[in-house]
Image 1 (cartoon, helix red, strand yellow):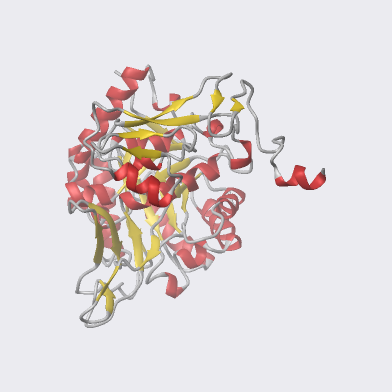
Image 2 (cartoon, rainbow, N blue to C red; image 1 turned 60 degrees about the vertical axis):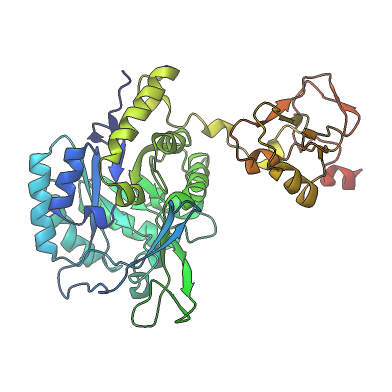
Length: 434
């Protein structure tokens, strides 16, 4: 069987599935249950300075977005960092690490942008035997209003400065957790790299309001008639997270910077996609909060079986494999031609493909009197919309035209050689130059 063990910046774990810093990792009881269920590691919920306690709301902390089948697609949370005393958390971290030495235990930290504050807390964490620290530069609500969280993560100079302080004051590996609430995620990743970070993790939650109570006219979750923006996570954010991970992995400035992938990981396939785009491991939150800790067993089994079937003997064999194929639009082959094909055996004659194409696309699907749907090659631009709206998986597929075939829509012969946009005759820049 494939070896699922992971070595992430020197932090070893029996598998690449870690629980992210969040409510599931807030105390010893939860973390012990997680390790017993099979999780390879946890990032302990964010600790702050000793002193006046953090006070969370005593009302609803989560808003939600559901699919038509009531499947949870996204959570919006307004919970702050841990509201438990620092000394209690540190004592529990030490006890858990002692009893589970083979599991990864990383501690998330958030303190003010003052070097002395970091100098005070780092030795306390180091004394617990924790494997590393994760700097929370991503939390978009509550703490950011106090000059921490994403307020730091949105300023590359602050990221570099604080990361350097941390590296100068601890032996522990330092992972910088990045905010997605920024225009170009490559800039903060580069700053973390300059500051000496051993790795980055992303994405943290996305600033959001998921819904409005139309009786109270207040954002949800609603606390005494008022609501606030929160952090959005869950399956819905996965596409955003995948893109940001890929942007960092294929950026020459950060190509060798290890990445811990976060954002909507629910299945083994999600994890494999993150790792293919450069993540050395993945962190999970919403899936565990939805289905419980034992969901990791499905992830472990599924990933292992897939790796065995494909002949991948270790995690390292798949990390980054998709990065060379992740390109910019102008590098795509404009001579590559496909056409939609409808399987009449699988078609249930619902007409979704016809309605979508006729009303909103290229009028490339015909409908006969007996509701037989067929593709009109002359009009099909291979946009894939019909495939995406069809309720029957595999009923509509895209068929590649072989080199030498004639594209009936344009009358042109499909070329055998790749063509990128920079040399294509229709490139506006070339046309203008000529």
